[in-house]
Image 1: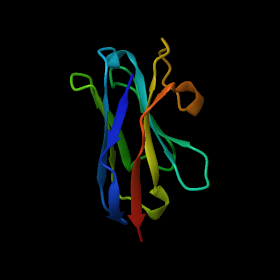
Image 2: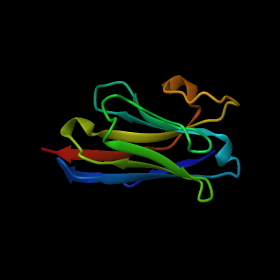
Image 3: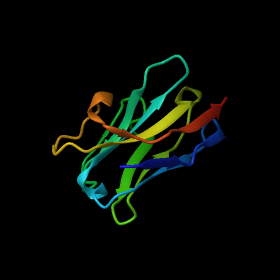
Image 4: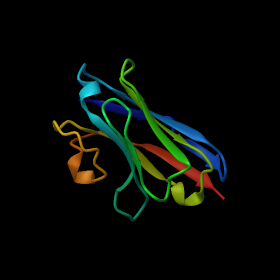
Length: 125
């Protein structure tokens, strides 16, 4: 599985941004997908995850109500719509795939076994 994240950039506080993650391989619809982020000097943290069908989503408390994760299995792409961005949202954002045959949509970094290269999001105050 190869994942390619895109859509990052420099925005101002309160702006919106949508990240995309394109996946290779026909088994994309079999994977739960997640977005994570890592700020300088901090550990990688969970942002949001979505089930195979897209019917179940989970979010970190820090982004709940502001970010929306979704997927288009026909396009083999997962999205992260980010609104009302804050300076503390500044980080490198990574998409990841959980290829294990499980139903539970995990929030744990260790559960995800394939990772994209990351895309930088910088929110200026």
